[in-house]
Length: 314
Ligand code: 5GP
Ligand code: MN
Image (cartoon, rainbow, N blue to C red; front, side, top):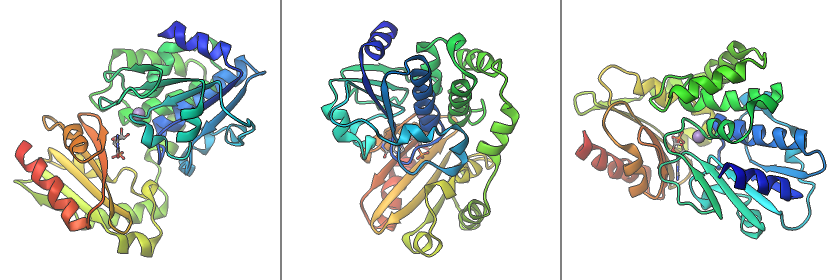
């Protein structure tokens, strides 16, 4: 697979790179890492990145020129990263479908293998880690390494989540040898909150509900709240982790309603509940310990549907 991917990159003159809708650190980091690696090693190729609504916290790894789509017509190659199914490429699905060749590099257990060549490793901590197994770290610039490191720390919760393995640490070790200030990246992209994020998290935590002997902790931000505050998904970053790390909690659940009747469900578990199963049952996906779905129902019904499934697993 390593050879197929490097051959396809070499042979393609125009390359599109895309990740999932509402991109997180791994999505932005892996896409920008791949972009900068290709742009630096193959300056003659036309490379464009398709990501929308990138949270401002990741500005330091965004190459603006990657988002100015210079290429006209179909791409020779589309590389989908950190994306489990084609619908989640939102905004560039047509570019994916019309590309001559397609690759998917991903670590979601629910991945539907939608590309011509699929490199899907559910055991990997992140798509960024996977890219480090495909591209030689020795040949990466400090910028590329920084983007991929950012991706790894975001999907591992700074090396805390169970997806962190020996390979993750070894790769991270090689990446930090490039010399960037990793402490600053962790603080500013992971822990730092804006005032609005603080308030959104505060609202959820204040209204959080504890059920099933404290094993389930959930919070709801309905359309009324979202509409009146103008909150977006980035404003709830970290909220679900705060609930997950509450004593006695097995499953943390956060429901957000950005459009009326369209409920984004986020789930996390600690020890034994497979939340990806619950997400898939609702048309979503993800990982065993972190998954999500969008449910088109009134928010109370969406909550009841998910709670019913969680209850049987607790
Ligand atoms: P989050 O709760 O942070 O949005 O997502 C947790 C994990 O589940 C991420 O890996 C994300 O990619 C995945 N996920 C979240 N929502 C969906 C969804 O609607 N469909 C799929 N396939 N995966 C999702
Ligand atoms: Mn990821």
